[in-house]
Amino acid sequence: MSRKQALTPTFSPEVADALATGQPVVALESTIITHGMPYPQNLQTARMVEEEIRKAGAVPATIAVLNGVLHAGLTDEQLEDLAQAKDVAKISRADMPVIMAENRTGATTVAATMIAAHLAGIHVFATGGIGGVHKGAEDSFDISADLMELAATPVTVVAAGAKAILDVPKTLEVLETQGVPVITYGQDSFPAFWSATSPLVSPLRLDDAAAIAKAQKMRTKLGLPGGQLIANPIPAEEEISQAEMNPIIEQATAEADAQGITGKAVTPFLLQRIYELTEGRSLIANIALVLNNARLGAEIAKEMR
Ligand code: PSU
Ligand code: MN
Image (cartoon, rainbow, N blue to C red; front, side, top):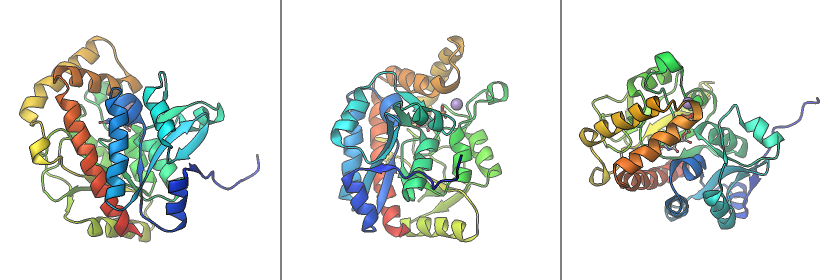
C-alpha cells in the first residue's frame, strides 16, 4: 500500500462554501438521530438543531457515512432517509474503516464524528451527551471510545455533561487520566444531562465562548493532542431533577442487566427505556439541551478562527 493523503469528507454545498470562505462551522453527530431518539422527533430535532446553528451565525455539518462515503453536511433528503432507516450501523472509531470499506451506511458516534470533523477541518462539535464509563464497568470493562477520542483528536465537544446512566465519577476519572480538559460552562457543578446540576464539582470552569476557544488553541500550541469536553448545563427551567431521574435510571439499568444487554446496545436500550418510563419527558429535555449545546457550539466556533 502506498502512502496517500488523508481522506477528505464529501461536503454539502453549504459546508463546502463555509469552509472555503472561513465561516464558523459546527459538526453534529448522527447516532443521536438513528439510535438516540425515536422517529419523527429525531428528524425534527436534527432540523431544529441545524437551524439553531444557522440562527447563531454558524454553519451546521451533520456527519454520517452513506453507502461508504463520509459526509460532512447532509441534504434534507439525506437527513430524512437516515432518520427513517432501519438497521443503520452505529459507527465508533473501530467500525469506521470497515463500514466505509464495505460501502455500508452508518451513523457516527461522538468518537467517529470527532474523527470526521478533524478530517474536514472543523474544530467544534455539538451534541447531547458523550459516552463514558458504564455502571458496572469493573466487571464489563464497558468504557466508551468517546473518552479516548477526546484525548486524541483536536475537536472541542459541547455536551450537557455525562448522563447519569453512566458512572459519572469514573467517567471523570478516565478523562483526567487521559489528559482531557473537562470544562463546565458558567457554573461549578458538573451538569448531569437531563439535570442542570449534580453533586459533583466540575474539574474546570470557564464562563465565555472566547475563553473556551482560547483554551483549545493553547492546548494545540503546547503540542498536546486531543480536544476538550465542554459541559453545558441544560437551562434550569427545562431540566428534570436528579431526585426524579435517579430511580428511573436505576430501574432501566436493572432491566438492561436482567435482559443481558451489553456492548453497543446498552446506551440505545437505556435511552429508550428512560423515554418510556418518563412518558416522553426525557426526550423533551434531551431536545432542549441539544439546542442549548448547538447555540454554545456556534458561539465557540465563531471565536475559534
Ligand atoms: N448519549 C446520548 N445520546 C446518544 C449517545 C450518547 O444522550 O445518542 C450516543 C452518542 O453517539 C455517543 C454514543 O457517542 O451514544 C456512545 O455509545 P457507546 O457508549 O456505545 O460508546
Ligand atoms: Mn460501550
